[in-house]
Image: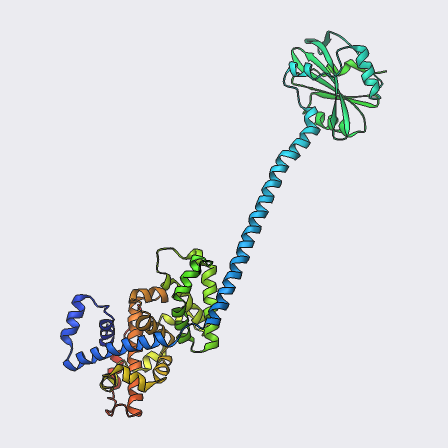
Length: 241
Length: 201
């Protein structure tokens, strides 16, 4: 720190007590009075500059107006952003509910039924051959249904089969006919559809992807088996008239 | 001002100080208006960066100073070392005349009129910023160092040089205008060089 910096720092009260005392000791009487004069002068100078100019009102009003505009734009921006986020969230919720629901509506018929009881309760047509024949005819399906209490899958396994009834379910704009069985104590559903339909395609695709047990073509129809129990032979119970 | 948000209220409280500083740094009404508006808007847009409980004035002065220096096409690097003007100016000079002149500070300021401002304007930007912040706005050395992002020693040097230059200019004016009659004491070049010290490192 040179002499001028010491003087400057002393004037500003930025020296430590020890430094200030040492500096004061080094001052001549003239320098001391000069310092006092300079301190008074700077105080007057500071006061003069502080009071001689202020921000013009029109400028301040303009700046405030710009800040308010900025704030409003940001607020609107924030509002819009939150609105967009809200809309997106709502859309996501709707998509996550409606789309899967819609998809589920179109794929639920390919999923195994949880219990035999549920299967029984959902039967629209009783386990009656005539009623079922009539039901299939109403769907323009020239199919016959063979009733049998047992059916042999392989040389080593014979399935115990009980027909529980039939029903129709909507899949999109189409319908699928379902024949419901108790196969070895496990719910099993045989799907019937006209070929070259969306439902037929879904059945065949699901079979290829092994999401259902099996499928086959029966004349102009496609049949598929949905069950947790492996019994593709059930599809042999359906025959073309 | 109930309709204003707290940050704007804070700016409003000090806006005259801010404008005064910008005006004395830019020395041009049109430029000062633009710098002030730009700095206040920048501060408002970055208000999330201001930490409540910290020195709002210092935070604002940093923005104002940066805007002033950008507007004056001076970079922050200019603060890091003493510019050539500093070296040309004797650190001491005309003290006796000056001290005689400022015996009655108010009378001297009245006699100088705009000459005081011309002398302040003649300072380097760094000296002017340091002097305005210290003498007019009352910042401590450390606050100035923080605002200008420079070492404390450099602030001290800028202040000392700025004051010396101001003394010299005003003493010359006082002599020329017959406010005081004592001649300015000349300083030998060797003495001048002794005053140039590196405090920035």
